[in-house]
Image 1 (tube, rainbow, N blue to C red):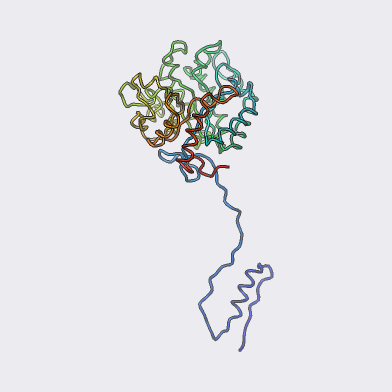
Image 2 (spheres, one colour; image 1 turned 120 degrees about the horizontal axis):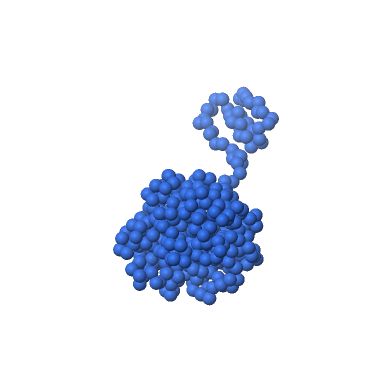
Amino acid sequence: MHKRTKLCGIFISAAIAAVLFASCGKQESEPSAPDNTQPEIQTAEEETVSPKVTVEGTKFMVDGKELWINGVNTPWQNWNDFGGSFDPTFWDSHFADLHAIGVNAVRVWVNCDSMVSIKLKPSGEVREVTEQHWSDIDKLFEIAEKHQIYLMPTLISFDHCKSGQYKDRWRSVITDETAMKSYVDNYVKPFAERYGANEWLLGIDLMNEPDWVHENEECGRLPLEDLSKFFANCTAGIHEVNPDTLVTVGMGMIKYNSDAGGGRIQNIVSDEVMTGYAGEKACLDFYTPHYYDWMKNSGLGCAFDSSPTDYGLDGTKPAFLGEIGTSTPLKNVYQKCYDLGWNGVMMWCSNNGAEHADNWDDIAAATQNIESTAGDKVFPLGKN
C-alpha cells in the first residue's frame, strides 16, 4: 500500500516532530479522527506569589487567602531606635522567637519622641530626615522578611507633643498648615515611596494614641479638628504616592473611632471627616483601636467581649486591636476576638528592652492557639 510522508522542519523539537511523523504515516485508505493531542512544552517559568497584604471588604487578604493578624507590639528596644541605638541583632533574634510561636505581625514605633531622626525647624517645618533613620528601617524590613513578620510602623506618638524642648514644634506639625505640608512632603511621602510597595508592610500607623494630644494639658489639648485634618493630609499623601499602601491611626480609645454613642464622642477618622479635609484619597484602610481594662470601667465597653460593630466601629473596614493590655489570659482574649469577627490582635507588649516580656508564656499560649485554630489564615503562603 502506498504511503506518503510530510517534510518536517529541522528546527521543530524532537517531540513535536515525532507526533507529526506519526500522523503523516497513517494509511490514506483508513481515515481516522484527527489527533488533537499537543505535546507538553515547558514555555513559562513558575508563577510567583506575593505575600503583600491587600484589603477586600472587611478582610485582609494575601494571594486570595484571608489573613488574620496574630500580632504583638514590639514598640522599641531602646526608645528611638531607628536613627538612634538600633541593634539589628536584637531584632533578628526577637523576630525569630516571635515567628516560632506563630506571630505574623508586629507594630513598631519608628519615632518615639523628640527629634532623633526627623529634625524640625523652630517653625515646625522639616529641616532633615537622617540617612541613618532610613538605613535602620531598611534593615528592619530585611529582618521582617527573613522571619515572615509583617510590619506596622508607627510614625509618631502623642509623646512628641508631650514633653521636651521640641514639643511646640511637633504641635505645629499638627496645627500649622505650612509645617504639616512640610512633614507630609518631606517625611510621610518619602516613607511611602520607600516602603509602600514592600511586601512585608502591613500598613502605616500614622500616630500612636492621638487622643491624649486632645485630652491632656501636658500634650497641648489640640483641637480634634486639627488632628483629623492632619491625618487626612497624611493619608492622602500616602495614597497619592502609592494607592495600595494601607493606612490606619492607632486611636487610644474607641470613643474617637466611633459614632455609636453610649459615652462615645465621634469617629474623627471616618471617611466623611477625612475626605472633607483632603479629598477621596484621604480614607483610612483599616481601624486599629486600643483597649485596656480601665476602659471597661469608664463606660467604653470591653473590646474582646464584643464584635467590632457592637464595640462601635462602622463595619466598613477590617479592624483589629492595635494594642491591648488586660489581666485576662491572652489565650482567651485572642480566641474571643477571633470568634467575634475581629481581624486580629496585637498585645502590649512582647519585650522588656532586650528581654522577653514577663508574660512571654501567656503570649505564646495565645498566639500558638490561634496558629492552630486559624490554620492558614496566620501564614497563608505557608510557614517557613
